[in-house]
Image 1 (cartoon, helix red, strand yellow):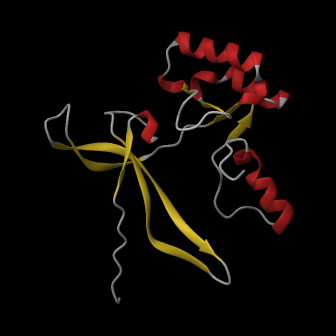
Image 2 (tube, rainbow, N blue to C red; image 1 turned 180 degrees about the horizontal axis):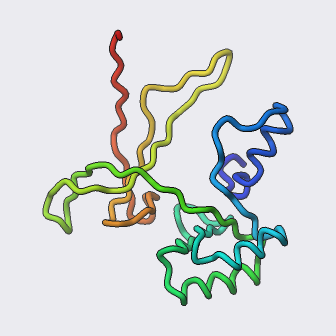
Image 3 (cartoon, rainbow, N blue to C red; image 1 turned 30 degrees about the horizontal axis):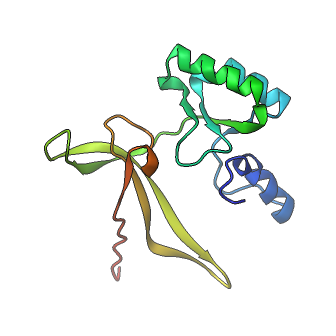
Length: 164
């Protein structure tokens, strides 16, 4: 359940309901195509949004609106009309860029690539942020898609900690 894309929409509401407070960290703006008001917003802004299929994994069934062709946008418009429950939309987020050793199409060179960090947090009697995590990297030049099934990869993530 925690990895279901539709859950993103409900996270702030879950926090408010169970903890009686607003989230400390904001969630990326998420819209459900199954909600009539959200669907109108999505349909009017497809070229500005990232649309994801709720039932696909690994970056499949996704529209990157700001970088999509008119044909791709219209195809998604028809898919959303046919099955609104299957789609969420989100505002695009700016991913950090990191120097990445690229081989293959560049014959070995450092180039900037988009990355996202997935830290690991253990929650029990106390909350512990682990010293490391998973950094996913978009290996295709200019891509914002970091999923390994869509040409992404991963990087070692080290947290250096001193005595000071």
